[in-house]
Image 1 (cartoon, helix red, strand yellow):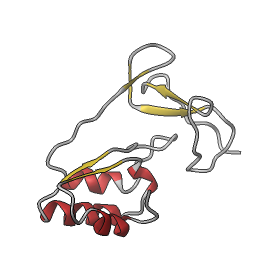
Image 2 (spheres, one colour):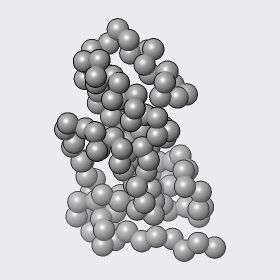
Image 3 (cartoon, one colour):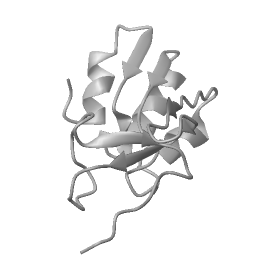
Image 4 (cartoon, one colour):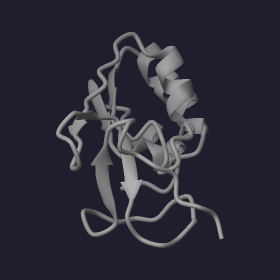
Length: 120
């Protein structure tokens, strides 16, 4: 585990492949770090949510997508209708952008079944 993207550079200096998960929790510096790693000849694999519970892009994911050679967007199954789901429906009452949780706090939803909770 690391606190900042810069720590990855030191930890990965002797690696050929670098895997980074939960990229949405990192600062925008992650894109520059991944670019540096790739420029150094390392294979960099990054996973993370591309949108928050409101459907707004999560930085640094758009910057990573713009620089990536290969992109695989993995979809879940909508818990309401069974269609492919690319959204995350928050099921608890809070409007903080980042809330760490699992099935007790979030559900996979398709565009049709996803809704943005009212602020208030």
